[in-house]
Length: 499
Image (cartoon, rainbow, N blue to C red; front, side):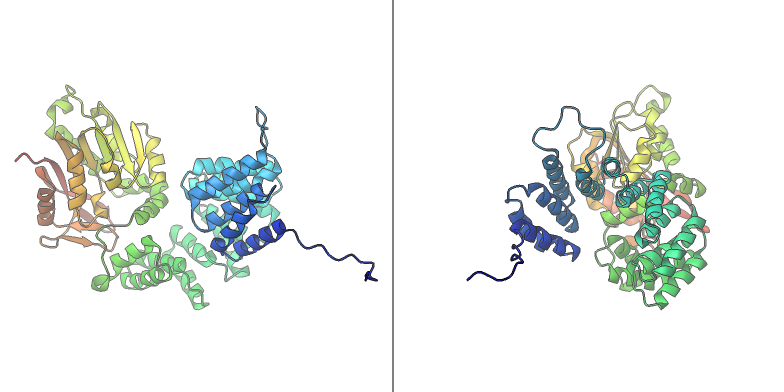
């Protein structure tokens, strides 16, 4: 029987719309794993491949699968470009490509390829100049890359477009802090915290800005006020702990580092520092985690050399004199060293001290991308490798005439395995030069409150013998100043044992 209604029955939503809508809802709810099966179905529908690839990239980023997310973003960009892109691509990407460019930028940022991430985010800004979100993403990556003035420019543009957006305020305040414009950071972060007191990370960043500006008591007051308001964040406890360390309150710092580690159990940086300050009850690791080292030195890189100069750091010069004593022909210029491997090369201080003595390849290895960027600027290395030391030593390479490890073994407790890997890489007459911070005889190795390991001389001698190395030279040396004292250590030259 025909209906009397003049209003047609609503058409059911197409399957593609239902799948995409449900996937977006799951992504907003931070349930990316549940979205992936829906996207498997969506990408099989005609005409939905690009949209499915875009959502897949977002889901994979949520699952911290950055490499796969980059591949999905690549797929989306290729589909958006069409089957026959022009021979000369347009100077400005189409607006439709901007979401995929931003997702690929975030994926590459997560993989540590910051220059490529910057290129993608900049292309997204070109594609949608009026979108403050693209400028926010570009500014964030520029800040991570250490290009603070450019970061502030783009974050400032995002702020002008969305002045009341707390996330934009937070990111711009962070960039001001990194650029050492602490007054501007304090004004913006203070406004952000006043308007949005529960915004995750805002109170911790406000306290951190006060700390790095040289005001530990002010940082302590801000952090304690935030905790009193009921905030419970790992970052807040961590900043408070670092401020208390600056005020020589190690007991208080230990409590807050332990609280931070409990709130962020997946964070190896906090776990390592909590163990260092935790006393006898702490579970002491045999070495610092890779993520701890990378986090520490990525943040330290811009001011690393200036800090060491202030502390009277002596190790690169001491190693230079070791080479000159032990290899007089090299010192006289009648022979040249090489190849050479600089473990934990940092910003390249040892490479700069020795490069004129090395006639073959000089390779630097470090876990911190930012430290390697600083080393590259010196122009003294033939090759730089971003790698964990054990993995780097296991790579095929010619026998090394020289291996250096300046202030590297202080991030390892147990040394036998690392020393054995060094021995395997040495030429028969090659030299291994390294230093350690000294622990009392009989103590084996200890994790100090500064997060570094100290080694007892008797343990070190036994570890060298176990690794098949013999001592060529062994000296007690003051390595640098620290706080009100001097860091005492051992400077060692070793070679493959000849027995």
